[in-house]
Length: 165
Image (cartoon, rainbow, N blue to C red; front, side, top):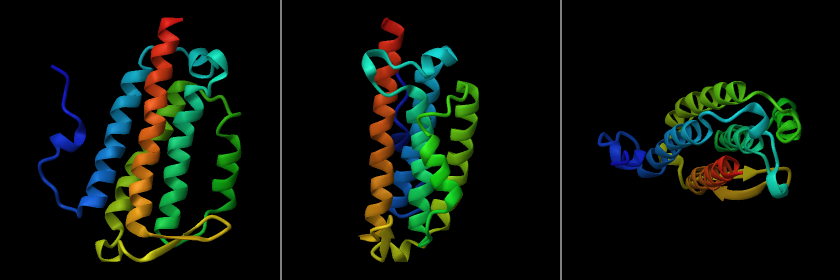
């Protein structure tokens, strides 16, 4: 029998539901990406069958977008370094092992950052991007979870396709 999803395995809820779900999603990302990419070559990770985005891009994008969005959640602006990472998500073909180390470091750091957010501010406004689009903190955190999940789905599907080719 397959293991239950993280949110069904986490009996001790010590945070509000929004932050708890985000942390469950981040752990689910770590597990599913490791499983989906296990045994794939670096060449496969950066291949583009049928022109689709490579797995390596999705892994880098998950880590980068979580970092950038949590920066907004912390009511800060993203840095030039974060923008530089964004510009190389598709072009910097790092080995799978390096990608996974970076992702895992991001996810561990993200756990601390999410836990440090004040649950009493979930309705407070945060501003996103250069356009400074206003959104509640709780909605931003929910978006991080759903955005990550979209890319996890693409990773799992692409890995299956790569194994079938």
